[in-house]
Length: 424
Image (cartoon, rainbow, N blue to C red):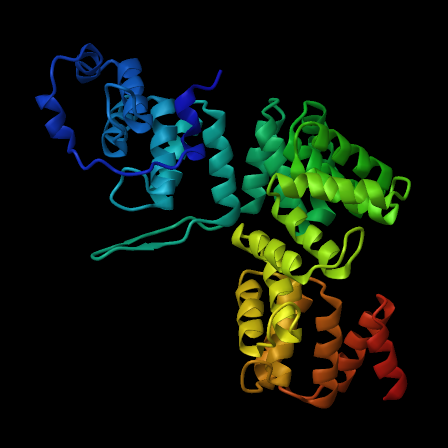
């Protein structure tokens, strides 16, 4: 049974009380504190937890929480080491965040048998831990080792620890090469976690079914995952389920059901649903057209951190939908989402550079953003990059590569690429 204090990562402290550990000695008689001072690990852990979360009699103080977690960890407590690692990872109660220190403490906790620590260790190992440059020294980081990380997560998942199966699947699905080499294993692990009712694993398994990762494509299987996840309260699943009903993929075409699901998820504040509901109002689909309502929904989605909403807002600013035409503001919105990694925004931002929308024309900058978007498979960017290469616009002319990219875009269904090839 995982103790409450294992879940520090789910809580963000509101403030830090700046008491020093030494000042704690001035407190009135406190049996728990006396036991902790005497070296009783269980009391040190309980005291640390009370300081971290706060109680009626013990004010919240992450600095003192770290002090007592360290005391317990130094006596070999895996729980203390794990929580100390979380504090270093998040920068809670310590002088500065440090993934290097976090990695070290997670390693100690993992050796003590704490599954959460093995999970965090594996995730850090998959990404790598960068060097930390201090004023007088440089702390050496840890190189990424995805093979070791996968092995660690695999072994942990095989013990029945569901989060390890879920994170193994998440890592594999995020990388094209890993999908090819480890997709089948990821799918099997996600199936086990999904059977146990893990919502995130159901969503990831739906991706495997939809995109034929680690096995055959199965649209009905994807719908079944979304239906179950939605039944477990996932508003994100409702959005995907709505899309399936809207296009009749894996389920009978039912636009009314799709709209109802979107409204339901949007009412709960789900960012994807807010954006999709905005599209309904923009296009006058299922509801009376309302640009102000569409813009309000796009803004709510954007303010929730959903980057595709910035692309919608940029488009509205560029075309003057519900607002005055403002190319500078459009480019700003595209740029925000492009730098955040959204492929559609990267294409749009490249187009701003190419055509001088809201900025001075910059063909080389356009090529950069088209290349960036193309890495994610964005078809419009693939076409535009091909044209730039064919014409030598912003890049050294390369007829062969330009033609190859245009042919790839045309083969994937891009009509403009096909027209360009036929006319040149």
